[in-house]
Amino acid sequence: MLIKSIGEILQKSIELGKVKIAIAKADDEEIKLVKLAMEKNLADFILIGDKKKIKKSLEENNVEFDENNIIDECDSAKAGSLAVELVNKKQVDIPMKGLMHTSDFVRAVLNKENGLRTNKRLSQITIFDGISDSIQFLTDCAINIKPDLKCKVEIINNCVEAARYFGYSNPKVALIGAVETVNESMPDSIESAVLTQMNRRGQIKDCVVDGPLSLDNAISEESARIKGIESSVAGRADILVASDLVVSNTFSKALHYYANKETASIIMGTKSPIIMTSRTDDMKNKLNTIATIAYIYHMSK
Image (tube, rainbow, N blue to C red; front, side, top):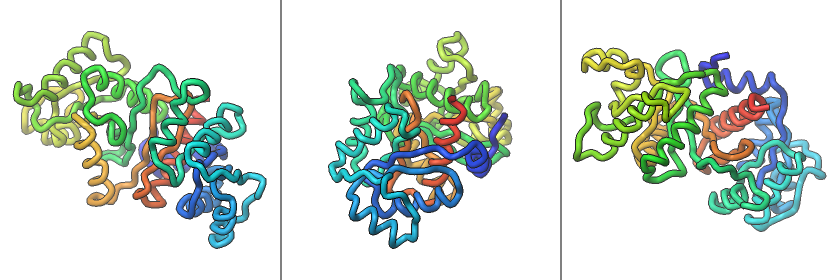
């Protein structure tokens, strides 16, 4: 089934039933999110952190919560490890980063002995409502800073895998650049051409890759027509792969602050889904992320 909007993801997640989430270092912002998610019947929670502060915040936000589902642990590293441990013990479905450094949370997730690491690369994907009647995927906005050719292959593979959960069985992947032609003074345009050829020869599977494509030519059929670009991806891209994190992160923030788009953020490459939102995300986008990760959790079973 093809999912066409962020709102549809939220509704489908609610219909599929509640997931259980362990929040490492839950604080006031997380408590507000917990209240919203519980009111939507989206999830149940175990809260890890300063128990006194958590109880006070729950009371101030008028959240009815079973005290047995609060774990008193103030150390960030230990809180992250506890959240992952609860997943491995099948006591919760998904671990979530609260008020703690991303590095502490990722360290717990990638722990070689009892983490959730695989042989895949970790990468981030922003999902948003596209300009046509569909969702689009933008990657990598948070983890891989300057991906080389091998890294980009893995980023594309992760995003193609993610897109399949939402019904995009053979997604169109646009490799975004400043221009739509190969230019030796722009190394990313050369990499894009190589990746396109790798896809044509079956080295990147289950998708159609083309690039370099400037953003307008990737998402607007009219722009592609004016430029005379003949491509099954141009103007119809499902997945946008940026040249580096600076480009993708800036684009992701522009979607939110300039375009007022609802977004969700997911991390791929772990054994089971994880939630890692930004502190600056608004409450709606954080809820969207929970719903999206919950949907992936259900669809992966």
